[in-house]
Amino acid sequence: MLTLQSDLHGNHLLGALPSHEWQALAPHLELVHLRTEQLLCDSGQRIHHVYFPTTAIISLLSTMEDGSSVEIAAVGREGMTGVPVLTGGETMPNRVQVQCAGFAYRMSAPSLKQQFARSDFLRRLMLLYMHALLTQVAQTAACNRHHSLSKQLCRWLLIEVDRVASNDLSVTQQLIADMLGVRREGITEAAGKLHDEGLIHHSRGHIRVLDRKGLEARACECYGLVSREFERLLPRLRQAETVE
Image 1 (cartoon, rainbow, N blue to C red):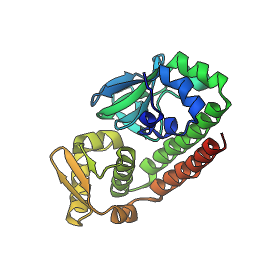
Image 2: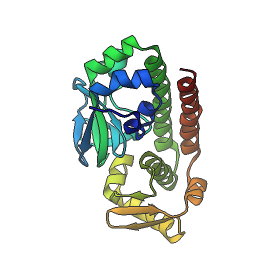
Image 3: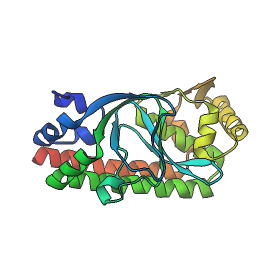
Image 4: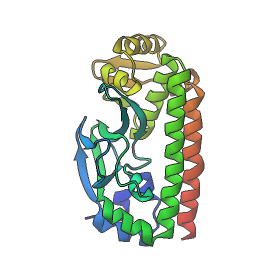
C-alpha cells in the first residue's frame, strides 16, 4: 500500500493525479518487480491486472500464426498497460511482455474499472493517454513499412531512453531485431554504423547513447511526431491537476 504521493512520481499518469484521486487509487496499487521477457498477458487472454511502469519497459507485441512477432508500442513511465479494460474489451488483442526489467505498480482490472467509472478526472486522463498510445501504434506501423532500418533503429533507441530516463540500455541486438521484426544481422550493421559515427557505444547486451541530438537528426519523423503528441497532452494533465 502507498502512503505518500511522492511514491507515484515514477509514473507520469499516476503523478498527474490530484491528491484526492491518488488517495482513492493508492490502496489498490502494488509495487512489483518485473523480469525481462515476463509474460503479463497473452493475446486473447482476459486482462486481470494493469501495470503502471516506473523503471520497467513493457512491449505490446503483435504475434503472427507462425510465432513471429513485432513490437507495436513500448510502454514505460509515461503510461500503462491494459487499456482495453476501460473500453469494454476485457481481453488483450496483443501480447504484453516485459522488455526491460524494472519496477511497476500493479492494479487489478476490476479496481481500475471501478475508479474509472467514479472519477471524471481519471476518465479524462485515461482518454488522453489512449489517444497518445494510438498515435504511437499507428506511427510505428507506418515507420516499419516506409523507413529504412537505420532510421527505425534510431527511433527505437530514442523511445527506449525516454521510457527509462537514462542513456544506458540493457538490450541485446537480438532483442532489438525481434522488436522491429527484422534479422539480427541488419541490426548489427546499423548499430555498427551509429557506433562508428560516435552516436552510440554498444557492447554485448548494452547500448549507451552518446549523442542524443545526433541520433534525433538520424531518426525519421515518426519519433518527433509521437513525442510531440505526448508532450502536447501531458501539460494539459498538469494544468488540470493545478485547477483541482
